[in-house]
Image (spheres, rainbow, N blue to C red):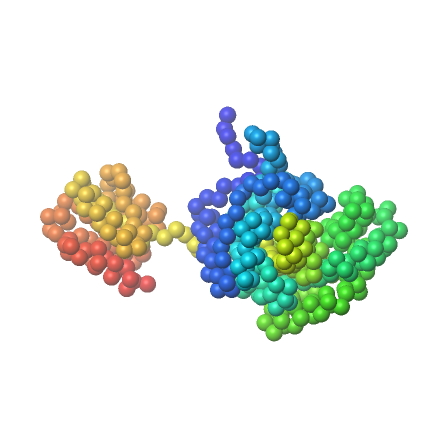
Length: 422
Ligand code: AMP
């Protein structure tokens, strides 16, 4: 029986992986400019990390985690997101003692047992950005700026930042109460999920996708009427900085994000190109999370970006990307192959992508292979070339050919030719 990949878990084949690589290259470049440093975390964690970190009433913890017992009977979970793990690492390694604001980025697969559909998978990849150690609104703005710059560097079309404040433990309870009061007499019109949310977490009704709930949410009281003075000031400063930076944002009082740990600033980056799943990234402040997971009372803020959705939006502009091949070396006969292998190895050490045919093939077949590999140049080495001490090099695009002497300086001359050809 044929063995296939698990539903919702995709292979990313090389022709697509080159696009992913490009996104990662931009990620390293842009995020490091902002002072974020790469961190790597395990795929598996203790289940209770996510239960405590993400929140028991979230969709992720309630119904989407891949949880199992290992051979020792310990309950483990494949990470559904990165923030909880990064917070754990921050606490475990005493990174709050470095005396500076810690800024990290991470890239890797996440696992959620969701219903697979276009743009929604069970193994998907996120780029994750986190900062710990300051509750200054300029950090919020800088984090959002890094997201905006990143998406702009990737040439994501029509990016807007949706912005909201969720208040803090001081002012949110009053808002919860107001929401409960507002939705209670409309209970019969709510979807079954929202009926439960009304009891456990009324905020989550606001971003329900069911039409009737959404319509009711539009007229619900907004958090902005309830923000305490500190939260109001914080939010005003964040907005002012974003205006300084000319980052286009839109206030969205219905954006509450799916995770329990957010306080104050929350944001999503949306691209008009994405339709229903328009959010390509989302994040916010989580000032209580480090303490909640057993660390000191240190604020944090971050965001996560979905790779698959990014690639989906960028699809057309990334189609021109392909794995490079600078030079293909065609050889005819064993003696030529000996020369060809050495030449390939020299050129590779000079940072050129170089291929040759491992198996004896006719010149025609080797040229076909060179074309398939997308080689810019081909070198042809045969008996005649060895005897005549010169080889042919062919520009595969223009089909121009020239001779180069077969001597110790051959690789340097090929390199010079590659460099001067656009
Ligand atoms: P979240 O961690 O739920 O805030 O999601 C952050 C980003 O990850 C979203 O904006 C999506 O781009 C992406 N994402 C979340 N869940 C999935 C999924 N099941 N499949 C693909 N991408 C996802």
